[in-house]
Image (cartoon, rainbow, N blue to C red; front, side, top):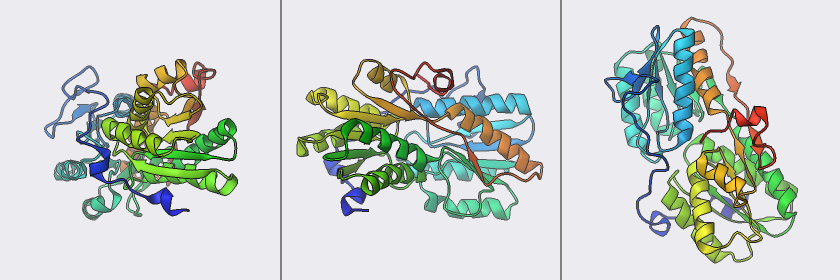
Amino acid sequence: MSNIARRTLGAGALGALGLSLVACNRGTDSAGGVSDGGGETAGSGPSIAIISKGFSQQFWVTVRDGAFAAAEELGAQVSFDGPDTESDVEQQIQQLQTALNGSPDAIAYAALDSEASLPLLEQAQSGDIPVIAFDSGVESDIPLSTVATDNAAAAEEAAEKMVELVGEEGSVAVIAHSQTSLTGVQRRDGFVDYIEANTSLTIADIQYSDSDVLKSTNATNAILQAHQDLKGIFATNEASAIGMITAIDELGRKDGLVVLGFDSGQGQLDAIRDGRMEGAVTQDPYDIGYKTVETALAAINGEDVEPEVDTGYYFYDESTMEDEAIARSLYE
């Protein structure tokens, strides 16, 4: 892969501190209560501590809802926590430590930084606490299973759609949400590798948003200013896509530019409906949450679990977003 495909934009060039995409109430709600560690809980039975990547996107609220539904239906006590933003690796590590201190029957973990979490995952392994990875895998054999979308394949499908819409010549760019989490790396690489292997398109730039709307807006603005002839742009998660759309709107640059995203959420759904985006790839966050609890319970019970549990994905646009299979995977 070309050097440009791995280049990082410095924090100063990306702008000031970011804005949260969705303000999520982490207090008691109809789904569950508040745990001592600051997260929410639901159900009763074997204890499963889930540490997500945060609550700054509706995606994680939907994952939580799926996990809590599984807790009630399958019989488990599930706690759900995550950092305030997807750039706060330290806070997530502290939450993982707090979960371990509670000696749960299993831990489910979506790593912001796979390497940083390894010492604590080793601690879980030495304490015979099964670890299930979800959303992001962990670069280790400690997790018994990874419950996730095939992110590389999903991003490759986005790349195929990009080529279909812009042709095989010219330049496109990427707003990736992370260069430390496996989801960010896999989606970036799935898209870029397909473009480079199958077309004459050039990857004009790749910038990183840290799942922050303002950083994504500033990064997109910089790309569009520097590449006036850009034919398409792809964002790898909800926050990155919202920032991307915002910058395109502010600059009035939609005309002739193909815009693709990842995940859903109200902002992307609205942009697709009104023509500011051509489409996006959606995961099934509810199913990710549900199957994470289901897999953790199986591990607690000593059952064999699949090393990889694929929760699927769909590419959708205005013409397909009401299809039954796709509509149930979209969230606002």
